[in-house]
Image (cartoon, rainbow, N blue to C red; front, side, top):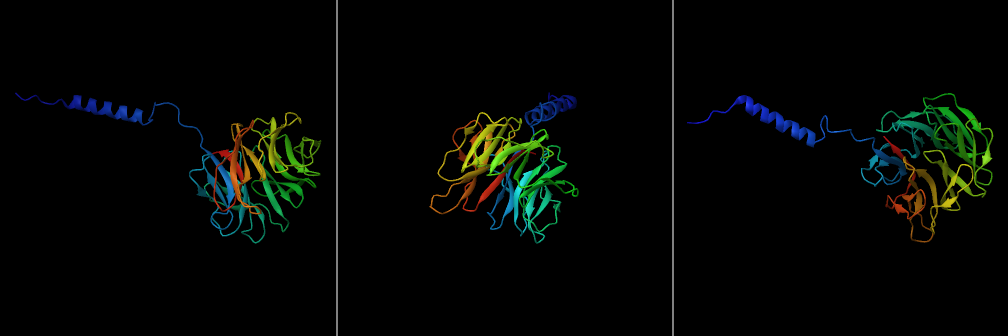
Amino acid sequence: MTARSDPAQGARRLLLVVVVVSLACGGAGAGPSSGPEEWIAFQSHRTFNNEVWVMRPDGSRLRNVTNDPADDIEPAISPDGSRIAFISDRGGSYELYVINVDGSGAVPLTDDVSTIGWPAWSPDGSRIAYERGVDIRVVDAAGGNDTLLIANVRRPAWSPEGSEIAYSAAGVAVFIADSSGANARQVDSTEQGGDPAWSPDGTRLAFASAGEIYVIGVNGTGRIQLTQRARPDFQPSWSPDGTSVIFTCDLATIPGDLNYEICKVPGGGGVAVNLTRLAAPDMRATWFRE
């Protein structure tokens, strides 16, 4: 006698298989989803004109964000990781622009023939500080309300909580002032510090001095040297967790030549490694979470 199959039993078996496969693949009930992805934005000449690119911290998944015939340089990421401020001459002169991280919606924020550079977002994402000539100005991230913040200084960097701003001044020394520009104080005792970058917890500054990268407490103590190389290192930026510092490094091996790449070093000191290696310059990197 041939046994007849039970349709209900078959359905139960099919349901069990579906549930097992769903759990194995991370379906509902499998646990928390992965967190935000980390990326590094940087300026590169790898397509024979300067563009803003992004890549994963290990150097993978390269993507051209701006993809425009004009020069697109000096990217700075918004605090929420959704937008990039950058400098471009696509309108005929170098101006400050904002673009979505997917490459859409590029909008100019300035319209001035002066030299413009080094954008830096306020922590709440509402304003952008930038260089115009030898002054630091601030403009709304949506455009408008462009005002002078501090005269005769460069390289603005907002503190993580927004109450202070670091910059380079005098003989290229690093200073910190209130976000209004008042109550300035020199952080490092040398006269060769520049390119300041705040650690995510707001307790330290990475900066470039005499072709090397240093870290110092915002109270001026605990200075340590992170790099010690024959070629210049500059433009530091912290990883989101504060454990590493990325920077522009010159990997040229021929005297008189230049080969700017993106390098990384532990924030407490250690061995530096390069994240990019190409004949075309890669520089001005920022590490962010999207």
